Length: 398
Ligand SMILES: Cc1cc2nc3c(=O)[nH]c(=O)nc-3n(C[C@H](O)[C@H](O)[C@H](O)COP(=O)(O)OP(=O)(O)OC[C@H]3O[C@@H](n4cnc5c(N)ncnc54)[C@H](O)[C@@H]3O)c2cc1C
Image: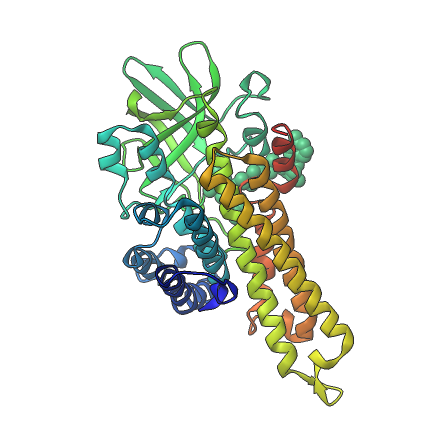
């Protein structure tokens, strides 16, 4: 049953949910992720015949996401544990694909926060492939550091939504880093708002990406999480109703910290899964590979290294589960979410690197699955905000 194997006290229903997700990760996410990772051209990843679309279809079939969990009578603290295990399992399967289906829910979340029946009807659907455009070509860390206090924002935003009558008119672009950027059909767009006197802060809109005036860049080519599609989104005089503005600048913590806390606590769990995958691969390999006439696991220094990996995975797991718990049962808690993200991504990177060392030369070969995990983990230390910058933002809330 995977990660939930070591979890005592799960009910029959909870065990079945974990089992379903583990099978999905083992049979769909991991093999398809490994296949997509090897495609030399990122256009192949999103081609009509790509197995990427099977991932989205199978994920919909599963019917297990934060929304379906919320409709069960499982109490919130148990839902938090299940959400942790589900995200860990998905990361264990493939980090890039886990992020792709994970970020898809952002427009759905914004539509629910809006309370507007029309927006909920339009966006609260499992058919939505969503994205979260926030990074700009000239403002990466800037939007994370200064999004909430725009008076200090350095330079001009690359994407501005200007109020005109009952509408907002959006012009500009978001960076090539937007996950699902070239395939999403809806966005939770965070960009500068101008109510008539210049940009006043980041606002959060939910919108369809089929609106006239929206175009996309080409899929980004990168070293890690290659199955995750990323690309620019361009806005040329895109007119959307004011009602689509869900998160106003300077609003409450649910709006302003909620997105970052949700993203960071999910990232923490996902990359605990990546660390767990590296640890398991190293453990299994060390029991099979013979050197000095015995499995390398029998050599004391290898054993000690394996235990060090196990220890790191378990403490990142404990912290990330606490982050998901606090952010599920209470209001957004950014410091614990960032602590989880920073710790888990660093842990995933260190454990994958230690695992490569256990694999010896085979660890460097693309025939073995371990070097991919190192590349995927490396990307995570920049993803959703550079770790050091996120720590600066979180420390402001202490
Ligand atoms: C896999 C992946 C997925 C992503 N998905 C999304 C997505 O879905 N949506 C989206 O909008 N973006 C996404 N991003 C973009 C990501 O959020 C940015 O890359 C990140 O915020 C850093 O911005 P940057 O790349 O412009 O780096 P920069 O901001 O240019 O930073 C460069 C370096 O300068 C340092 N630095 C910058 N400012 C400061 C400061 N004030 N103090 C100290 N150090 C500083 C940084 O720590 C870093 O080391 C993704 C990125 C990756 C890698």
